[in-house]
Amino acid sequence: MNQDQLKQMVGEAARDEVLKLPAGQVLGVGTGSTANYFIDALAPHCDHFAGTVSSSNATTERLLKHGFKVLDPNDVTSLPAYVDGADEINSLGHMIKGGGGALTREKIIASMAKQFICICDSSKQVAVLGNFALPVEIIPLAKGEVMRQLEKLGGVVSLRLAKDTRADLGQTPSQAFVTDNGGWILDVAGLKITDPVRTESLINQIAGVITVGLFAKEKANVLLVSNAAGVERITF
Ligand code: 5RP
Image 1 (cartoon, rainbow, N blue to C red):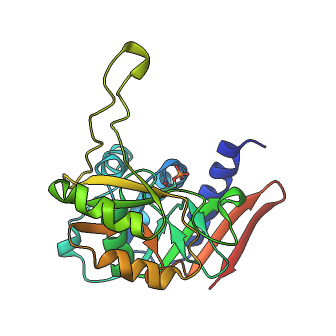
Image 2: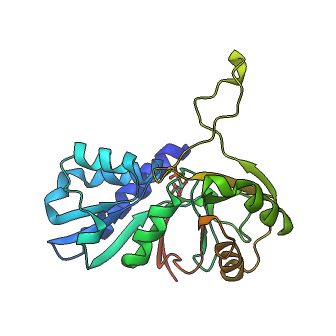
């Protein structure tokens, strides 16, 4: 099985998981290729939910295309579950997220939700977080100072660039990737995050940081993880 098939399999398992929720509630929906498989699998059942709250413009577009109602989070007071992927997850349910750049809205919706259902293939399971460069969304004018502060934590920091920059065509790869919120993203490589709660709190306190892609406070409550043998369900 290739990774896409594993993502599809776990997306379908998540569909079965959320259809056990009572009908007529609102569902939080994440961003990324695994979340996309989940959305596609759930589409025939969109009437089971009163609506959804979405973690990115890309997810909103996909949900609307499939006939889901997308609500403003400000109009939602109860969210039983949020389903989303992860870039890495440890044995306690702490995650690195933000590979797709949607970390801020993802964290807001995760904080609203009663349970975070993380969906991924087993390549995302790690003993120690940090092999995947940690995304940090920032206010653009704070880039220099936030970079210096992050370097003090021992990481190698780089500004995420827009995907359409073509170095092979002689274009200068200088254009920053811009998030749905108008922020920029610094990717911090080379960290060994042995205390995710502390690291999340430290980075949150740097002036100019909008959101760090460490989800330790808003960790997963349920993990659906796929491998060649099937989908395992783990609770934290
Ligand atoms: C987006 C995310 C994604 O959940 C994460 O990057 C995993 O993506 P994929 O399912 O495509 O592997 O945090 O900001």
